[in-house]
Length: 163
Image (cartoon, rainbow, N blue to C red; front, side, top):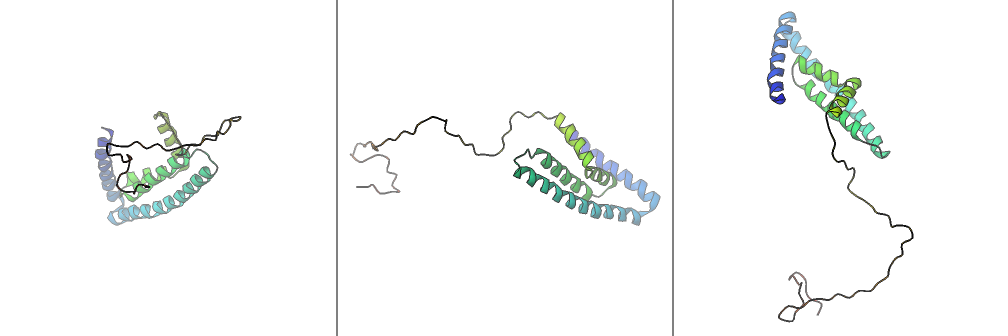
């Protein structure tokens, strides 16, 4: 329901703002403002995106929690998309998301509404041997069952039997 309202409300707001601003300052200045905010916003997004990536890499190298830098990077990406979308409302929202304090507030608001049930970081687990345990040496012998013809079972046809 919320997504539907956003897809309906945002274009209506943008059209209304284009009519108001275009009527006040004219068509050409209105279009120049839209193009200029896209160019400036993209440059700001690129700069802040590189900084967010550097923070993420340093956090990962230190073995820290990468959630904060990932969330900031995601919001910077959303800001870039909003700045590239023509319109005054989307440009203002995108520029606001480029302010770190605003991103912090959005992240904390979102975190208060999310419940994490499980979390894992990395895919390898290593178990250390318990202190004081001994290694056990053993010998083994393969026992192959034979089928009705007297041949060992398990030969798939891809390998030759040892005999």
